[in-house]
Image (cartoon, rainbow, N blue to C red; front, side, top):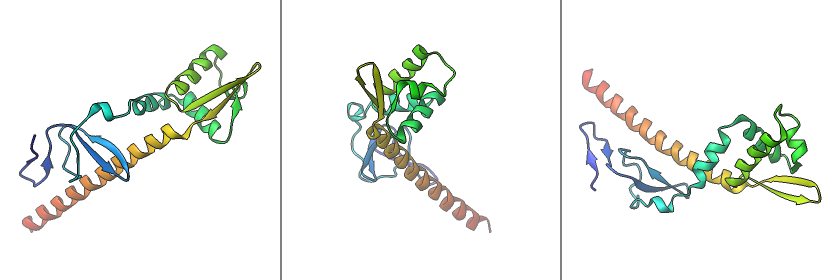
Length: 155
């Protein structure tokens, strides 16, 4: 589908398009502005489902606290569970969610399970956030230019 320009001069694409910003790939949502002239055709199969799982995992304050603690270094499950007023089986479910999305990995030595943070999924999240920041900065710049243009016509 072709891009369409509205009366304000902002270009809109009526479908999903892939864009590359800062070395990271992402998808511009339906109706988004034409911000990247080098956008590729959409391919939902190429978008990593891990990103959704990471955001879902990080939506919980207990899991965020675990990731923050593991950023300082490895810790046993007992050490990680200690500051949280929840039962150990409930805490283990939280660890399961973090392991399922790849943010945390664990290894068992004897009866002790030690957890480590895996930075790769967090880098994906960071890349997506940076991509969104660039898009919104461009959109706000376009809005600012439009406001200045309209202000100039009314003076």
